[in-house]
Amino acid sequence: MKKINHKDFMVSDTIELSKIPTTFDLNENEKKIEAALEETREKLGKLQDTLYAHGKYAVLVCLQGMDTAGKDSLIREVFKDFNTRGIIVHSFKVPTALEIGHDYLWRHYIALPQRGKFGVFNRTHYENVLVTRVHPEYIMGENIPHINTVEDINDAFWEQRFEQIRNFEKHIAENGTLIYKFYLHLSKEEQKNRLLRRLEKKEKNWKFSAGDLKERKLWGQYQDCYQDAINRTSLPHAPWYVIPADNKPVARYIVAKTLYTTLKAYDDIQEPELDNKTKANLDLYKQELENE
Picture 1 (cartoon, one colour):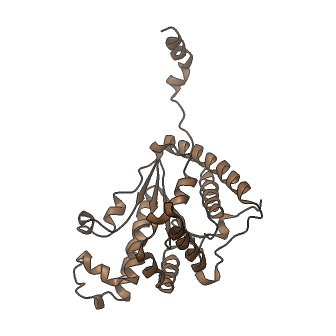
Picture 2: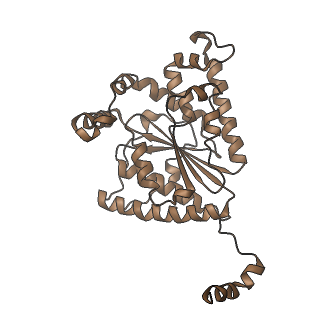
C-alpha cells in the first residue's frame, strides 16, 4: 500500500480547493485498505487509553464537509475501537432556543472534551462562517446588537467572527486541547451519486431531504466559503487537513493515520507511574488478595 504523509493534506499555505483532488490512490484494493484502517484504529484506541490515563491533553476532532461527504460513517469506522468513556461525539444542528440565547460559540465551549478525552464535532463552530455566510439572513435570528438588517452583515462582520474563532481555538490549544480540523473534500459529481443512492435504496431514504437539492444549487458559494474559512484559520496549533473524500474507505484511513501519527509524536503522553510506596508493596497487595 502506498505510504501517506499527513503533511501532504495539511494546509500550511493558501489553497484553492478547485485545484485539490477529491480522490487519492493508495494503490490497493478496498479490502486491504479496510484492513489497514482496522490496524490503525486499534493502535489509536490503545493510544486513547494512554491519553485518558495521562489526563493532561484533550483532543478535539472537527469534521466539516458538504452533505453526503461521509462524516457520520467516518466517525463510526475510525473510532470504533475507542473505550466509550474516553470519547464523546457532538452533532451540531440548528441551534435550540437555549443555544440561540447565548453567543454562537457558547454551545461549542460547553461541548469541549475534558483532559484525557477525545471530542468529535460533527459539523462545528465553522457552520457560523459557512451556512450563515451563504444564508446571512440566519444571522438575524441571533439578535446581535448593532445588526439590524442583513446589510449590516458586511466584510468587517465576517472578519470579526473569524478573529473570534481564531481566539477560541488559540485559547483552548494553550490550555491543553490538541485540535484537528478535517475538511472532507467531495466532488460535486460524487455528491450527486450519493444523493441518488439515498433515493434509490429504501433503507437510505430517511437520509434524503429536499433541502439537500436546494443547497446543492449553492455549491459554488459553499466552496468559496470553505476555501476562505480554511485559508483564514489554518494555523500550527489548529491546522486544517483537506481530505480527498470521493472514496470513503480511503478518507477514513487518511484521517485515522493522521491522528495516530501526529498524536504518537507527543512523547510526553505516557501512562503515569505508580508512586514508590505502592510499587514497593505490589507483592503484598497481591498476596492479600490471593489469601482472601
